[in-house]
Image 1 (cartoon, rainbow, N blue to C red):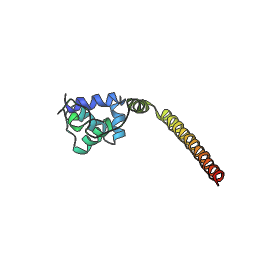
Image 2: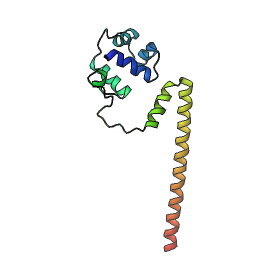
Image 3: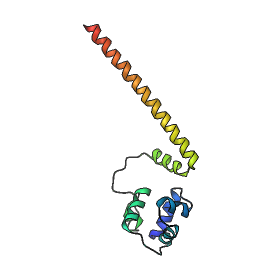
Image 4: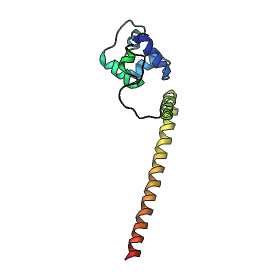
Length: 133
């Protein structure tokens, strides 16, 4: 498979259905992305690296040198985390804002709960110290 076909396939797999929108997100002209996907033009190293990182594949895979997608770098991420990321990318701006807000609230709740547990532990230690004295 050619670089262009792989790029198009990865773009669609990751929820970027519209080429023009994806090009705008990358900060490149839509025609440039089209030329890459149609194998009319070859990208430079910075673009290859950016796509490799974005799609979590090796540059060798992008260039068609291997069928193995995995990068050599260790990326500890569970399948469920990856699925959540992919679903998040499919959301519109309102959906992303709602998810971001929910995460912020949950982090605040978790932090408050952890602080409360730490205070209780501190009081228990102080009580035990006084009890021993």
